[in-house]
Each structure stands twice: as C-alpha cells, then as structure tokens.
Amino acid sequence: MLRHLIDIEDLSIEEISALLDTADDIIANPAAYSEVCRGKKLATLFFEPSTRTRLSFEAAMMELGGNVLGFSSADTSSASKGESVADTVRVVSCYADIIAMRHPKEGAPMVGAQFADVPIINAGDGGHNHPTQTLTDLLTIRREKGRLDKLTVGLCGDLKFGRTVHSLIAALSRYENIRFVLIAPEELRLPQYVLRDVLERRGCDYVEVEEMEPVMGELDILYMTRVQKERFFNEADYIRLKDTYILDTEKLSLAKPDLSVMHPLPRVNEISVQVDNDPRACYFRQARNGKYVRMALIKKLLEAAKEA
Image (cartoon, rainbow, N blue to C red; front, side, top):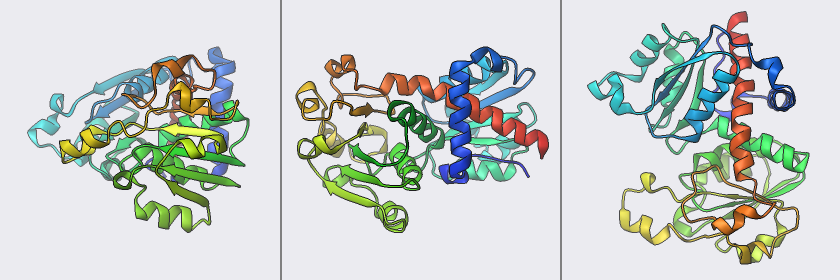
C-alpha cells in the first residue's frame, strides 16, 4: 500500500524516532546519503507562497542525489485555469516519484493522496496541519534538549490559525509529562477542537494565559508564532493583534538559562533581532534541521513505495 504523510499522527512514535535518528545520521554522515535518490524526482506543488518549506524540500532532494520540478504559485499552474487538485496530482504522478504539496485549503493534500500514484507529503494545508514542520520541531527539541518528554512547552501568538502549533501539539501530546502553556489573546486562542480532541482526550496538562512575562520562568521551550495576516478576513483585527507579543531581551531575562526559543519562521515583529545573538535562540538552527528531516522522510517514503 502506498504511504503518504498528511497528518503527523500518520506516524507512530517509533516511526518518528526512526526518522529523527536518520536525520541525525545524515547530519553526521552526509556523504553516505548523497546518492540514495539518484534518478528520482520530487515535484513541489506549492499553491501557496513559501520560502523555507519549498526550498528545504528542494535542497533535501538535491542533497540525496535526486532532481526537482514543480511550481511555487497557483498562478503559474493549471489551477489558475480551474484544474482540480485530483487532476493535478494524477498528471504530476506521471512525471515525478514523490510530491510535496502546500495548499491554502484544509484537506487538499488528503484529496490529492486519494488520486496520486506516488507518495504525497503535506507541506501545509491552510490552518490545519504541517507535519514536516513538526518533524523539524521535534528534531530541534531533541537535539537541543536531548529528549522529547518531561518538558514545559510555551506556545505563543497565533494559536487559532497556526497549523505548526496544531501539528506540534498533536505530536508532543503523545509523549510523557509534557505540559503546555498556551499564550494568546482571546481572539487567537487554541481552537476548541484541539483542546477537546487532543489535549483533554489525552489527559495533557495545559494552562491558557494572555501574558508572557508571568510564565517565562517556567518554560523549557518557547515556541513563538507569527500573527498571520493571510488568515484574517478583517484587516483591522490583524492590525490590532499583530504586535500583541514581542519577545525581547528584557522578557528573555526572566527565562531559564537553558530555555530554547523556537519559531517556524518567517518572523515579523514577534522576536526582536536583539534575541538572535542569544544562545537560547534556536530558530535558525531549526530552519537548518528542516532540510535534514525532510531528507530522512523522502528517503523513507520512496523506500516504502518501492516495496509497495
């Protein structure tokens, strides 16, 4: 059976661990992986703008010895002529061995997976899910902290529309003794379905707060997020909320010496550039880790497709 990655929960804890182990080995021994995808092609179908995710997928495939084709905007694809996702993936399956798809509509990669003849990787679908960012985040946490359990994780900013947050909560909630501190204004709080179906169903410890400063000293991880202009229907609401949280050196002085500050990027104003020089700032290391974990995933899915 063809294997896809649409949701982080498509992977077991054991499979996640194996992918992170492979990513670690790629970091340590890149030459050993430089030809494993020779003759293979990755199609990047990005119906929504992206810098890091698209380029990291492309870099990942190239460093595995493969090739890349695709598009970076719906405007440059036949979607602008009205072609359906189903037809797009049917056609692209004729040209590529694996597909990474980003789409503004929730569920589009899942639809694509029903019609594709090659593995589909969800590279972000609307405000729903972003499993490869979550693998990136898990690799970063494990490399920074040495573990994925017994952590207090602060998630700050746009928790309502933030697909990276939703995916990360779904993943971390499966590990032992994870406590979530959800920092958001009333309008951008975590959706009720995530609270109910993930945190409460799994008995996770969590607290919802509106201010950063009182909880800074409790955190092992602080995961900052951008307030996403593209998810708002009302520009006035975006302008009112966009600078609600700004991490600066003063706030960082309240934190543990070994806090890890993460961000899926791009950032706007939510992390001061002064924080970049602090050793606790992990977000550029996090971006680099994205390439390695996507290399591990591409390798795994292509191997599984060969066996199917």
